[in-house]
Amino acid sequence: MLPGDGATQTGSGMCGGVADRLVTDAEVARRLGISREHVRELMSRAGFPAPLGHIDSRSPDPREVPFWRWSDVDAWACASGHARATRP
Image (cartoon, rainbow, N blue to C red; front, top):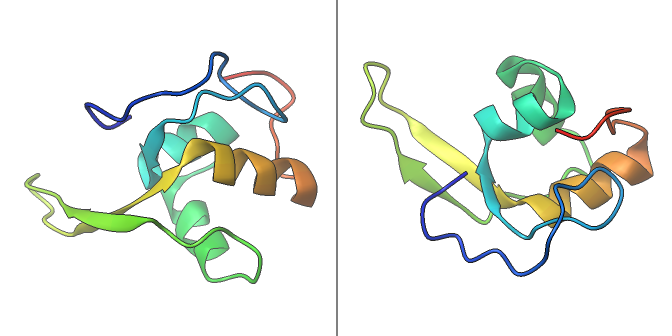
């Protein structure tokens, strides 16, 4: 989750009732129960939501980190069968 992301709803998601938070690829992976590499693979497929933007990582592995509105990813996951059976 990104600081100051301004959640607009309550709940954590997986097919509705999601808090509209901004999430990075790492958080998408955690919430869907998949690896970050799998998230990157899904990004190249038709239908996966386009990132809202990118932030610079200042970690030991500097890169541009994509971020999404969780409600967009949640809607895609539910429609495509990628939703986890349990809430994150």
